[in-house]
Image (spheres, rainbow, N blue to C red):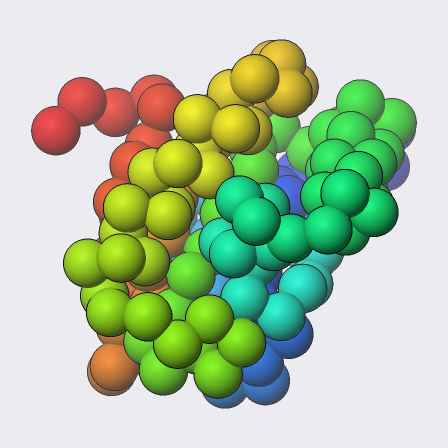
Length: 132
Ligand SMILES: [Zn+2]
């Protein structure tokens, strides 16, 4: 186990969304560090990406959680994603679908679906530890 508290995030490779997501997770999930798994359009990658990409994301998530001690995993989609240029409504649907996929991975940790809006503000779409 590493020193400090860790969270895991599956985020887009897009440089515009790294800092907002890291800051939000560190503050709201009260962790010191965030293990980052990046993929262009991660919501699309999980739902309809190649088998190899899907497996790679799963294996990195598993490593971060089972071996390195992270206590949560967030799947993040964002406004103006060039790798997955769909409407906000579609992204929200995809985030919800991704959370269902992540639940099937049985990682045993809190799962969050996050949306980074046009002002780089992070909105919680789903949080398995909260009821809305
Ligand atoms: Zn993107």
